[in-house]
Length: 574
Image (cartoon, rainbow, N blue to C red; front, top):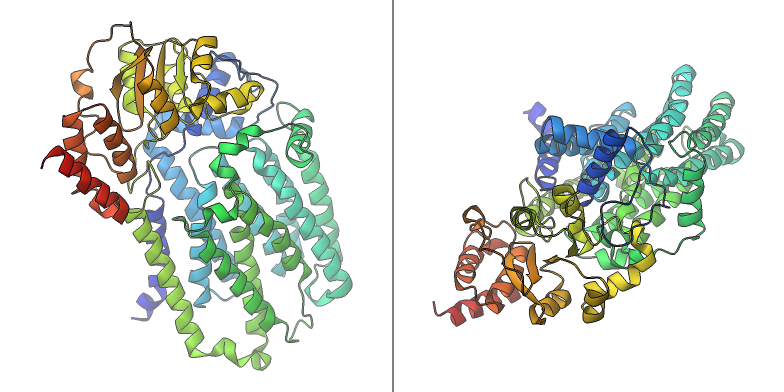
């Protein structure tokens, strides 16, 4: 019974990870990254050529360095299959949670009811960096860097502390060659160095030894120097600083990139960022207040904890893609504070030992686990589902139609779908644009207007193409193609509609693509397809989609959409 009581929180954390991260490949970025890997292997160079994937202008002046991650992802896909990428994602998320738990274990608080809550918060907060693409490696690298930084703070043996310190440059070196988010390590490392310096001056009871402190400064400087060890040398970090710190290059493409959305736009999402923010803030403030009582270590403020959290918190609120940084820093910070509170002994505030606090902590843990699992089942992200495969953001069946009918070689398409299209159809068929977006900055405004249904006639006259693959969620552009006298719809699947010039003869869809709308696993996707099926008079398609929305997908349909389904059924006549 005692063993069960100790094991159930870990089992729940693993269950939540298993359910929350049971998703298809949502992001089309994976496919252009693998196309880059294929290019590197074919040409025998780690330097990328961004051109050749699109028929519209695609500049190659942007340096992009993720070669190590791209080759790993491509190798797994080619050698083992897609399942290995899902296993990789699970492995990274589990490692992030395990590193947090190891911090608690080393500090002797692994049995505290606070630990499962914090570990679960880290596992859920890691989501933004966990999509299957090079950013997944940034999540792992960031977790390892934070783990090392906090481990040296309580490492009693100086020799081991020094070994940990000098792991930092090695981690940064690998990170530089896997994903550009390594630049975020700079403020974290700087905050740690400054914090430890302030600890030596103002709170020596919490400070590193003089020798370890000197080595930490040296390791941080060495880590800075390693950023030039990449296929582009100094030019790569210099470009990143110029673009992302100094704003030297205008990036209008951020306007439609959900990864750049602020905190306000994410409130109410399935990832519960507001609950995580409140939880992390309350835990740190409460433990900091309890820790403020003078105890065995004789110090009230740990400047490293304060400054490192201060460096990470802005990334949680400013950009959706960097929200995982604060949870990674929050976990070891909370555990260090909790360990110090426990070490206060008799001086420990009475409220920290109160039974209601323990019960409330367990309740929060159960709540987080329940809403995460329920959300994965009942409220999956648009074009996703609880399970595996290739998500509906990628036009899989539509690309097969284009390939079998040899449409092209120039496609109109929306950037989101371009990654999969260039992977599946290239090099014989070229896309208009893809989700890389940076090669297309010279004409981005023109692209943006076209995708939003503006300047349609002028754009198609200036830039004629042979076919179009238009995402169903881009309603304005879809309307323009449907209304155009020069284009006609020949096929649509769960993700996109395929159009060809009106005079072009195209045979009906192949028999094996006839089930393109069967067994859908996302209600939002089915509703978009239903809207188009009704508009073009595809009665069999309407019946098929309504049947799923009323049965297998009914648990995902909200009240407003449920009325929409009833109305559609009424128009169909039963």
